[in-house]
Length: 199
Image 1 (cartoon, rainbow, N blue to C red):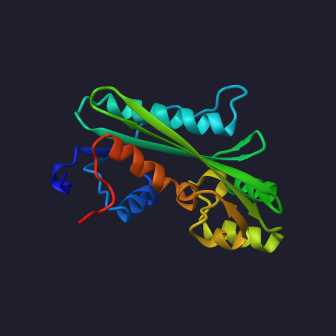
Image 2 (tube, rainbow, N blue to C red):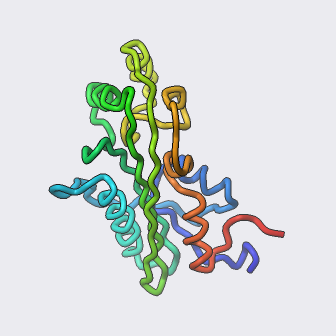
Image 3 (tube, helix red, strand yellow):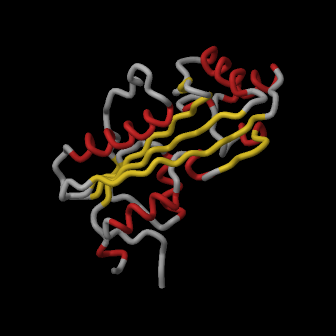
């Protein structure tokens, strides 16, 4: 199937990082429409289950627009044990998160979901384990001053300045950035959308 015959694809996320990741595998969505859902964790919901649920709910919500297309959605959640680290509300919240992750391991869960025109919904949950170095107060304050923590789950983006905090990473780097490429390409191709360029 040629690229021009791909089904229409809508990305249900306004994350510029997800758009950039899709472009690396030759995927350019026909439209970007963020799904507006309540992302509040349910009582006793673990980071893993939250990421899975939000990815699915975002795909379903976006598909309610009625347009015949593939709707791709994703959500990334950072967890320290059972504690969910969402997007920080302010600098103090970001400081708290960075101190919590300092010198220890945490997990990043990314749930992705693909809603097809016939109502079929496929999804994957990808987990990565990251260990941070022990952060000094100066490093934390420098990162806070950079502003890179804003709008990012766990108050950091591994693709930016916080990359220097990482001692080890086990799992998918692209999932930590926001979209696991292997699993995303598999879901798309299963729905008839050819991702990675071929001759």
